[in-house]
Length: 285
Image (cartoon, rainbow, N blue to C red; front, side):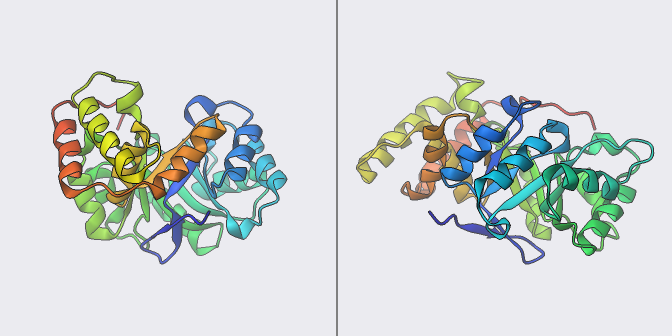
């Protein structure tokens, strides 16, 4: 299975869907789920220093037998110790991962670096210049955080990974508009949370109606999760998802083969999402 890519503002290509090693996999040995994800077709692996599992992620990468050039590896900068920089923190991650470089290095949360974002971003840029990270970006940044680092930046962020689903879509429009202005790819985590964290909301009947139409059109099974992932994909979102189940991994990747949503269906999802604001991860600024 060939996974389509999105083009970053530095010219690099990123697979549109990633297997994440956070959420339930935090502080866990991720060798088995990551090896399973790769065996079932994932090539983009999304890790983080905060997840405390980079060593086992590295073991899985080495064990899978897939050439490094065929994989896209992301990690994220945690809060810095007094003697650390973004570069030295990445060097520790690379040692744990057993890699010479990562494809994407993100500042995980702006609140970790209050008053120092520009300084931290300058060191992120150094990581890119020196080839330790092919591309650099951020996570959980709002408009003010982005504007702070964009001013005087040598390299704008290539990605901003945020909680993104229909229940926060309306509130994120100022951030997404800034992304478009600077060619920043929007990446989503928690994209399926409306189904599992707030069932019974205004989105549910809309998603089910679309699922039935897509299943009829396709002539084979389509899940409610695939409807939401398809909505994300058609909005040019880089999707980060996870599961410990191989059949669910295959289902997520199979979303690429699900028929496209109509413009009316996309609008109905976004209108339903606008009726109920729900954000499950709240970070301090």
